[in-house]
Length: 110
Length: 120
Image 1 (cartoon, helix red, strand yellow):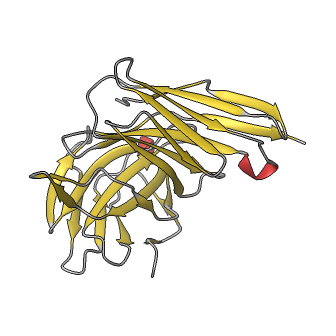
Image 2 (cartoon, chains in turn red, orange; image 1 turned 60 degrees about the vertical axis):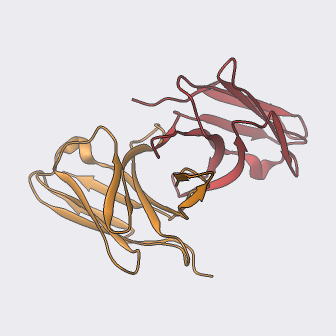
Image 3 (cartoon, chains in turn yellow, green; image 1 turned 90 degrees about the vertical axis):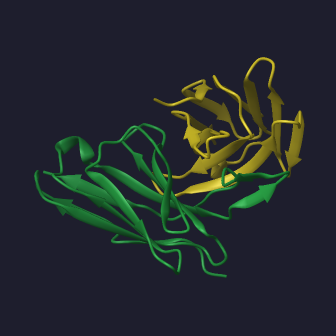
């Protein structure tokens, strides 16, 4: 079974708008990571936030983590056509497993 | 620095056959994980290898087995293929680090491009 659950399952926005995706999980974690996947290819790591961190930035990406609610969000600002992809959250657990959610399919409209 | 590579890119097998998928980890990484990704789903953790030993396993039957070699490359073997084994198989490498007495390999995963397996 998959631990992370992304919300929404699919998202379509206009180019230039901000995109927000959420992730919820069930058990204690070492870290939470976000990945991007284009057209069924290999996943690309975007950002990692550790369990003792609350917010992290990388370029146009902003990730928040609320361990009390067991949730995280990924914000992509000023979206571009190249941001069209599937986005997955993955939880790094203390048993050395990384568990992925089902992903959010993001479509940036021209 | 060489990234993670996988072979073959695509593979077609028939039900009941056996398959071996290969992965070369990124330079300097000593941990390899394998994932199965069905169409429209997220990657499902199969197992992880560290220092040539299995270091964690997901909910996959024993017919899914693996190997890690001294150069940290890895193989995934699947016996008695079933139609539901059709999927994208992803390999990922990462460094195993120790911090505060706790050893973890749950940091950033570097993925290969995957092997698309079709079982007919």
